[in-house]
Image 1 (tube, helix red, strand yellow):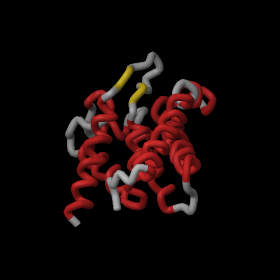
Image 2 (image 1 turned 30 degrees about the vertical axis):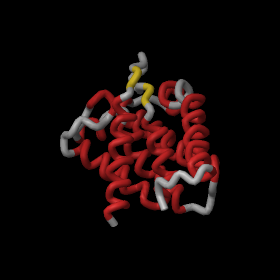
Image 3 (image 1 turned 60 degrees about the horizontal axis):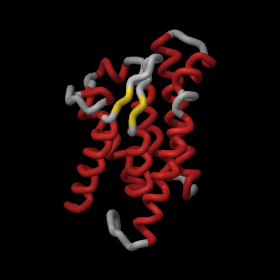
Image 4 (image 1 turned 135 degrees about the vertical axis):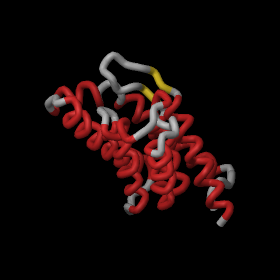
Length: 166
């Protein structure tokens, strides 16, 4: 039990740090490493990944500066990028599906993008094409790379018997 709690805390902290690594963009959605943190949580923690993301979201809603750019609060969740944060939580459902490998990460990424695009449409009052242009296209190559790196990080830890989660 204490090992599981430690892992949840470790992955939550890692997710927070990945949110703080932020490169602003002119269209409002920053480049961050959050997707990498989500993907690693899904691969390593499997069905417990949702707990990490829920803790992360709750900490942010309580006012701790855990979101991208050290943001916090319900206003961030209700803002233009809030759809992505909700998508992070929704993406963890892929851990319950029978898919393995990179496909699991790609499905998680699709869920994040759909939720993020819907948030942009609702909060910025823009059309679908514009939302995809600012919320998906600039990020897709880098996010697919994050999925591949996350998967191979997981595979290599298994190959070399590095025990993170048992």
